[in-house]
Length: 258
Length: 270
Image (cartoon, rainbow over all chains, first blue to last red; front, side, top):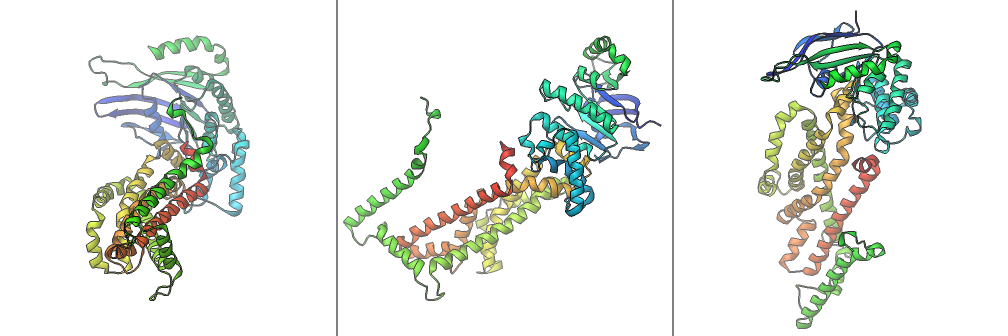
């Protein structure tokens, strides 16, 4: 049985169809990247994975169980920005998820549990390269560092699947390249299952083990909302194929733009 | 050089006190001129006369209370305003967060608290006096009713400012509604609420002095209105200055508290 199954998922808002006939599954440990032209329902699909939205038809199963209809700790997320707690220092931002697990009432722990959690959070900060900035507030960190922190914050909860929503879209090319290295490293070390939405085709090819492309296959000029986007391309990106990256890259670039 | 690029530099402190000095000077000249015409003038007492009056208010015990009147008045007024603002802050915090964070309760309570905030507080002072009599609670209640609705509205607004992404993120960290309120909403709202409280100080003093003028037997507002009957400007003027100073002190201490307790707040706003 597949890890994450998407079974005949449709999403419609009133008259307009956003997504139709989505059928695919993702295996444990895959690094899936999703691209597609804007308005192709990438974000809508991610919202459904998060539990912010539910499919109009069909179902999404994680380890055979339907997803809960609100966000939960089985699915970690990193957005483009705005996801750090400004009143907590970097270390405390990572500790928060663990603290709330241990203290339902205050969401804050003390004593030996705190010490243990602190160590765990510190180790996580180290693995994203932020141990030097543990005692800084998010507003004192650069954009790249903030995204590293956001990843650490999500990973410390050991989510079954990590969702990335254009996480490096606001970064300069230099930090972006650093982040790519980091994310691949983390993916290998922790054996993560990652689902990443991006509009950067190059990034999608470089990072993923599998590339998904959403687009509209049918289009009625008189009723632009009558048909939704669906999965038009599903490419395995294994090591050997990566050598021929250039070739595939061009074809896919055309399909997305077309 | 353009005016917008011109800074006072080392003269800045001087510029800050200049308007105060000018006002005192104008007063001194005017008082002097009036006293030259009529040495019994009560409208603009000289600085000496004010000084003498202040000495009596501060040093000489009152026959009834055996304390100097400025002392009893200040304690009475400060305790009323502290109680009023304290209760209003708690109400603002609780209702503001509940309405801002929980859509169900927002639907239930938001229109109601908006309607309540439109009631002119002074208009219901008679009702408060009927219910609470000339007791302390009428004065405290007026401050609460005058200030709380605004604190509720502001706090609700601050709670709703939290980005959708942040609220999703904290849910993916496994937070319950209560934990979200305690660990995310409350720290976000607290410094902003204290800022809103600073802005409410003017209104709170207004309600306090009104209530004291109408129904009281001590307090800063009571004294000013009592002295009006005898046209004792030498008491009224220092009292007004004292009230202004107290208001300034409250504002300043709140600013210090915000800076010390929430060091991340100013950084975040930058």
